[in-house]
Length: 366
Image 1 (cartoon, rainbow, N blue to C red):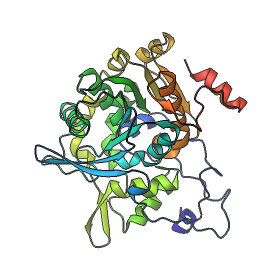
Image 2: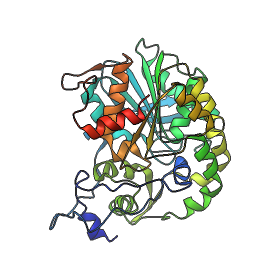
Image 3: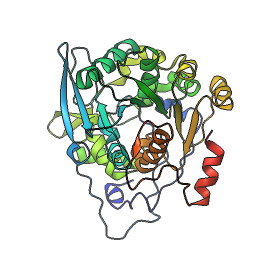
Image 4: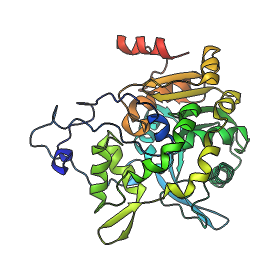
C-alpha cells in the first residue's frame, strides 16, 4: 500500500475488515507485532481526504508522565485519574505504555478509576542498565517495584490487565503475590499458552521479516497501518513512535531488538494456563477473533472458572484496534464484580440494545 493510499484511509468506524487468526498467527503475535492481511485500500476511501500521520502527544490521553527510579534503573510511567480502583496495564513485547492510550482515556470516562501504564524494561522511554533481561523473574520484580513506588501501601483495589507478554506477566505477578495491595481482578488480553508455545519456533524469522528501519516517524506510522499491525490511526499515531528510536538523521529502528531476549520467551508462557486458572480472583480472558483454547482452559471455561470475551474485527492489539469496545467490556466486568463504580453516562447493567450484541454475549459470556 502506497503512502498516498494510507493517507486516504477512512475512519476506523467506516471500514474495519475481520482478520481471522491463521494457524500460529496469534502465538506469533504473542511476543510482538503480527502482520495480518493489509487493510483494504480501495473500498470506503473518502475522496480527497488525506490522513494525518503525525505523532500524537501522550498528554492527549494521560494526565501525567513520571520517571520512577528503582536501584538506578529509570522506569517511565503514564498515569491517569486521581481516585477509585487502580487498573495496572502491562503491555506486550515491543510495545510501550502508550499502547493503552486510547483505551485508558475511554475507560476513565466510563468508570471512576485510576490507570498506571509503565514502559516495561527495555521498552519506550524506560532506561535500565540491563535492557535485555526480560526474564519472568526480573519483570515481576520490576512490576512490583513500580507499583510500590507510585502507590505505596494503598487501600484501593487493583485490577491487573495484561496484553500478550504483559498478560502472561500479569498472571505470574499475581501468583507470586508481588503486588502489596489487594488485587481484585485479573484481565488477560489475547494470549493463550498453547498457541504461544506453538509459535515460538518461528519467532526469530518473523522478527527479521519486519522492516529494519524507517526514514521518519510518519513512515513508521504508515507501515504500522499498511501492514495491519494496527487498524486504528489514532492509536498508531500515539503508540508507534514509542516503539522506535532515532539512530541517525532520518533513520529510525526498533526500540528493542527482541531477538536478543529469545532465551526468556518460553518462560513467559510455559504453564500459563494452569497459573491463570489458579488465580483466586475474578478473571476475564479477552480474545481477538476465535482462537482455540487449550485443554486446561477449555475445561476451566466449562466449569465457569473465568469469563471470556471475543471481540470481532480486531487484530492482536485489541486495545489499539477497538479501545471503546474493550473499555466497555472491562468497565462492565469491573462494575459487575463491584470493583469500580460507573460514571453517570455508563450503564453497565443495562442490556445493549443491538440484538447482534446480545446474541454475541449469550454465546461468549459465562
